[in-house]
Length: 278
Ligand SMILES: C[S@@+](CC[C@H](N)C(=O)[O-])C[C@H]1O[C@@H](n2cnc3c(N)ncnc32)[C@H](O)[C@@H]1O
Image (cartoon, rainbow, N blue to C red; front, side, top):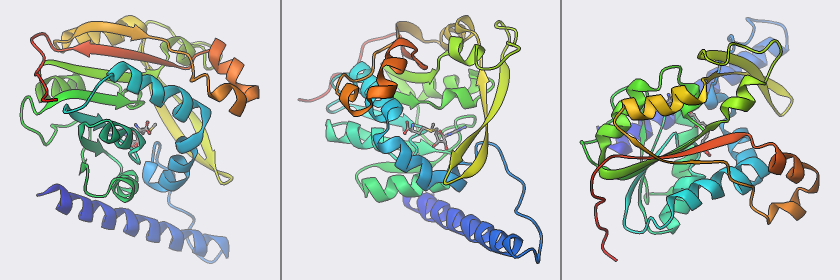
């Protein structure tokens, strides 16, 4: 199946799911029929538009997480980059604009449909789950960027093995995740720091709650997972938000600057990096 077929099927599936839900909502609203289908955790298809709109210009994504990922990636001109968990594609667009050859994957058809709208045909997009085999040849990429996606996975092993497989020698994985210290202090009573545990909460968009479940693990479990998958740790980063955000978000800026919420990793496949034509 081509990525175009993939996307057409994904978009149709997302539209069908939205139509079913709208019909169920309408029926439930007049009390005449079954209630809304039960909420599934992390159901990005249901809040794709709202999440993408929020992510586009907010402090945490637009002025902290995305600039940090781009700074860690550095010069990507001519590099083959996989945006893993690309969502609606804001990072893919920035990488493309910097001259990278970008491919995006995501498990949500709704998010991919938004990415397609943003990116047109410039970026190959695939519906794919990081917990499964990825639809790419060995060594197909020079870099994989995984923004805020690994913390949806209980076990990083299979995903990191696949990322390692699709990276060539010298290839880099650049990843951002919920900061383990912050995730650990999220609720009282605190969990056992040394255990991998899930935690649940709700995101609210347009007044409606959506259940989310994330996985937190201790820092050493993260670094161990990278090295067990064959990566060499190159950087652990706790960046500051973009200074431009100070005036835009005067109330929140100081809070984020003094209490970071994400942790960033650069890990590398041993070997010589592929030279890119300039
Ligand atoms: C917090 S959003 C981040 C989106 C994008 N990376 C960004 O920063 O704008 C997480 C994304 O990861 C995707 N995702 C969650 N679990 C996934 C999985 N197992 N495989 C692939 N994508 C996944 C979601 O559908 C969602 O688009």
